[in-house]
Amino acid sequence: MNMNKISVIGAGIMGRGIAYVASLSGFQVTLHDISEAAAGRARQYIEKEMKKSVEKGFIKTREMEEAMINIEYTTDLVKAGENADLVIEAILEIIDLKIDLFKQLDEICPPHTIFATNTSTMSPTEIGAQTSRPAKFIAMHFFNPVHKMKLIEIIRGLDTSEETVQTVQEVGRRMGKETVEVNDFPGFVTSRMNSLIGNEAINMLMEGVASAEDIDKAVKLGLNHPMGPLEMVDLVGLDTRLRNMEHLYKTLGEKYRPSPLIVKYVKAGRLGRKNGIGFYKYE
Ligand SMILES: NC(=O)c1ccc[n+]([C@@H]2O[C@H](COP(=O)([O-])OP(=O)(O)OC[C@H]3O[C@@H](n4cnc5c(N)ncnc54)[C@H](O)[C@@H]3O)[C@@H](O)[C@H]2O)c1
Image (cartoon, rainbow, N blue to C red):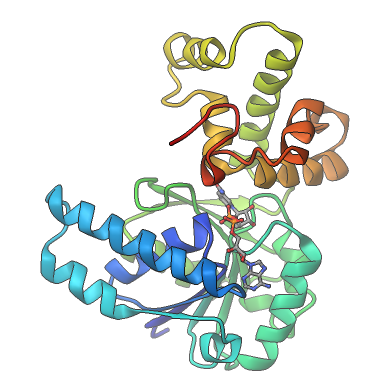
């Protein structure tokens, strides 16, 4: 299949990162958000990150200029969907929102368009079944920050076709990523594992086992993780992680019950790096 135009829906932490990598990989990209402010922030982020990459010698000025031209920013869903070969959805981790979005896109996009969700936990089978094209529905789970992280977890729904799997694997290769194929099960491999590690760290902090700094230091230096679990939750976003935990708790049971401390922090508006305060404070 000829794959030229990728539309990314949701211009938050993940959507802007996916758009950044896709544009540098030569795809025509439309980045859509319901919020004009979010789309504007995504443009600033992408342009700043690209300039940093040029300064560090990772990409050439010409590549940056071409990539910047490759991205269009919009709040118009029809514009985003009507010519897309692949749609990658990166909106909030709320199933009804995702289903509602894909139902609209199903009406807007041509029949050949592949639909991919960047969900961290949810079932591509369930979301795809609400569209007229479950064979063309799949999950592509990217990681944050997208331009640095090597993996895309690919989750095949019950009715996803082999052609769809191969097409998105090829897109992943063109983006310079490795892929793993995972069966449709809540949280796949990575979110299920990572949510538990993070939740245990948050419970330890709540119980007074150690400070946030020492929990993270122990895991980094003692267990050889590149990042501490609390630093990681701050990077992901506490609200996003809490939604993941709530879905895993609902679908997989007690072991995944969100720590009361993350619930309290989200209620207090401590969302992590994205708003300057989570388990740590940021400038
Ligand atoms: N943050 C991570 O580390 C991470 C990693 C992998 C996957 N994910 C998944 O990616 C998705 C997005 O997460 P995020 O961290 O980027 O969230 P985010 O809160 O940073 O961004 C979400 C964006 O979606 C926009 N949005 C909401 N509803 C919309 C709609 N109907 N149409 C268009 N835009 C809409 C919001 O305005 C916001 O800009 C979630 O499903 C999340 O679970 C997140």
